[in-house]
Length: 378
Image (cartoon, rainbow, N blue to C red; front, side, top):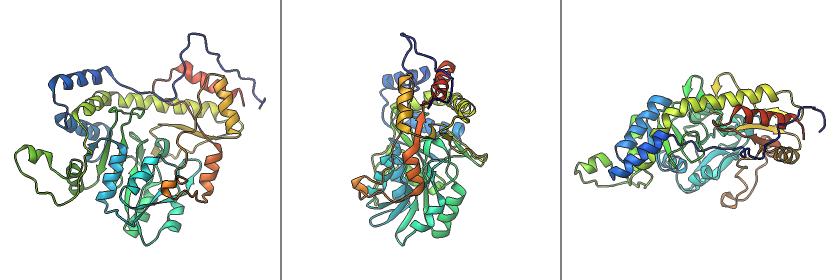
């Protein structure tokens, strides 16, 4: 594609390879981890409670319950929503495999919806077609950190008595109509994996809108036992299933140390997103994703649609810039039946979707390299 005279900046011999993702661990996180190790208090304790409090205070999350992974948070929400054997849960085909696994773990069946190809998120228009007598919940996925159409999804769910469980693994810090993701629907699950905006090494959180379900989630994350009462000498008589999903103080220490940097890191990601949009919006063969004025993305990915994707990825690689397809549709996996549904929006997305580097530690020079590499053509 020889339509542009722009030339990418060439890497020098000593120039480090550009990172597509980045793991941010602050000096304060290292200090807190060392303190926890010296204290010998590694199990779930005060640091976990502090981490939950800070998630609520700094990020606007409602009743966050810290757990050991985002998949655990999803499964816990599904169990609390009463999803069980023979039930169905609607979710987009464009997601990480863990979203579907959490449903199968309940004995339920994932039912895959179409997506909006210029957001990568669940298309609410496909919900009515997929509704059936066994539908129990809807699991919208905030793909790349961009919030789904939550008003339409929650209205549909309310009309049919369905639980809404947001998969917000990419979306810590995103907002929808002035509210933080994690403060909109009945349940919202977050991931704090190693490459997420906020890492605890590995971990997650489940937000529960009601006080009662918040208390239930706190019990169920540790075998159904209220740890505070148990430590006080109260013997529990269990009558429901619980799990070993709790976060420990070591992981919470990493999260506590990293949380104060979250606003600045999020701002930097949004700056990178803005520059890409300003500099690449007129490039032929490239279509930027939509950005509605009533929501703000967490910018975990910078996604777009391109013509001749393989050529695009190869051309950027030759210029020292990584471009990737991050997580392909999951409905074709044999564990879910092995059948790719006929989904028109998903099909377009499959053929043209690609991501550019996005992390808070990209330098201005690296951003210029990415822009120049794309504008040089493919």
